[in-house]
Amino acid sequence: MDARCFLYSCILLLGLWGEVVSAQTFRRVKDVRELESGAHYVLAGYCVAHPDSLYVMASQDKTGTGKKNRAARKLPLDKNGRIHIHDGGTAIFELQVEGKAYAFRDKALDAWLAYSNGRVQEYTSLLTLTDEELASSVNPKNKYSNKFEIISLASARLSKTSLYTKEDVFTSVSSKKQFGLMPVGGISFKLCEQDVGDSLFIYKEVQPPVLAGREDGDWTFKGDWLADSLFALDYAQARRIDFTAISLPQGKGMAGGGKMPKGYVWTYVRKGESGRLPEGWPNVVEIDRKDEDVQGRAVTRMVGCDSCTLGPKYSFTVPSGTGIVWYRKTEDDEGWLTVGLPYAVEKVTWESPDGETVASERLCFEKITGEGVVFHRMETDETWKACVPYLWKATESRESVVCFYGDGTVVQAQENSLKETDGFYTIFSRYDIENEKESVFLLDDSGTRFVRAAAGSWMAPGRGYLVYTGTGSHTLRLIEKDSPDEVDRIKFRTDGHPLPVYGPDGVKRGEILPGEGIPEEWPKGLYIIPYGKMMKK
Figure 1: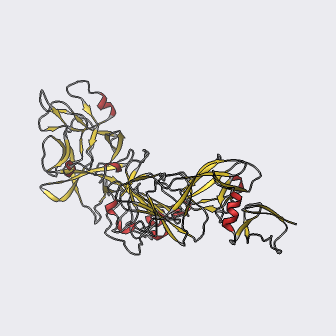
Figure 2: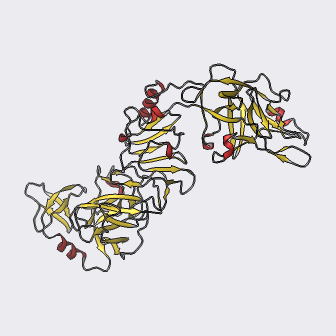
C-alpha cells in the first residue's frame, strides 16, 4: 500500500494530473473544519473601492505596540483562485487552535497577531506581540489578547468577514463588543466596530494531492485537489471512496477520461460538500462528526450487494424517504441462507424495493450444544435488527434477486476482524480465511450444516458465520428448536438433490446423490457429508 501511495503522490507532484503545486501556494478556506493547528495561512480580502483586486496582509519588520494596524499589499489570483507567494513581502501565519479559539503566529517575527481590549471608539489596535509583550500588560483597562473567533460558514456574517476578536472590546464606559478584522481601503488591515463594506477571508497553504489507494480498492484522498485532476480519475476501479480529509472542489462533471464509480460503491464526503460532486454520483454520505457514534447521514439512496467487499467505513443515518437496499441473488432450492446486515430491514421484496413481497422464514441463533447449533423460529412480524445474523429462506424458492430494504435507519460500521468466542456473528465486508485455526464455520451449500472454513476460503459481506472453539469437529449440525428430528427432516428435504462432500480439512471434494457411496476414483480416507461421516477404505 505504501508503495502505491508514494507512486500516486509522485505522479501528481509532477503535474500529470493537474497543476504543479508550489511550496508557497494558498487556497481560500471555505469551511471552518479545514482549519488545523500547525498549518500555514495568509489573511486576505477585498475592498469595496477595488473589487477586482485581492489584498493580503503584508509582512512587518518588528513587534510591539508602536504599529496599530497591519499593512496590505495587492496580489493576483491564478485561474483557480489561488495565491502564489514568490517573495517575503506577505505575512504567513501558523495557526494554533484551542477549542473555538484561534491564534495566528507570524512565522517571520515569531509573534502573535493581537489586539487591545481597552476603551476605544470605532477601531481597536491590531498589534503583533511576542509572548513576552503579551505577558507584560498589567493594566486591567488595557489588556492584550491573541485569541480570535471564527464565525461558522453557516452564518451570513461570512459574506463580510470570518474573523472576530474572541475577547470583547470596551467601546464606552458601560458597553463592550466584538470587533471584526478586515482590509480597509486596500491600505491596511484593521479591527473595526462598524460594517465598512469590506470583507476578509483566510487562505490555507496548499498541500500536495495524494491518493492512498489500496489493492482492495479502498481509496482515501488527502491534500488539495483541483476539479480537473480529481474528477479525471477512473473511479470504476474503486470499491470505497473517502473524500472526508479534503475540501472538495466544485465538479461540473467528469473531466478527461474520468469515470463514475460503480452503482454499489459508497462515497464519503464532508458535511455540506455532496453538491460539489458531479451530477449523478451514487451512494453519497456526508460525514460530520467522526468522534461520535453516528458520524453522518446519507444524502442519496444507498445500494449494496456482494460486490460491496469493504463494507461501511463510518456509521450514518438513512433519513426517511432516502432508503437503503441490499441485493442478493437466490437459487431455486429450499436451503437456508445466512443474512446479517448493518441496518434494520423494513421489508424483503423480489427484484426491486417496490417489487412483490417475499414470503419467508427466519431462524435466530440460540446456542451451540454437543448435538449441534440450535436456532429458534421467529414470527413473521418480528423486527429485523441491525447487525444481527439470521438464517433466512423464501417460502417459495425461485432463481431471482432479493432486496432487503431499510428506511429511517442507522447503518453501523464494523471493524474487519472476526470474533473469537463461540457464537453466530455477521460480517459487513469480505473476509479471507488464512488458516483453519480461526475456528470459523460457514453454512454449507445445502443450507443444512456448518462446515469448518478451509484456508483460502472467504466470506462475502452481509453473511453470517459461526465461531466454535471446540476441538475435533469439522461439521456442526443445524438444529431447529422444538422441531421434529433434524436428521429425518434434512433427509426428506434433500432426497434427489446432490449432497456436498468435504474432506477432514473442510475443503469441498465434490458431490454425491443420497444413498451413493464415495466414488471409486476418490482416494481412501475420511469424508464428511450433511448426515455425518463416511470412511472409504
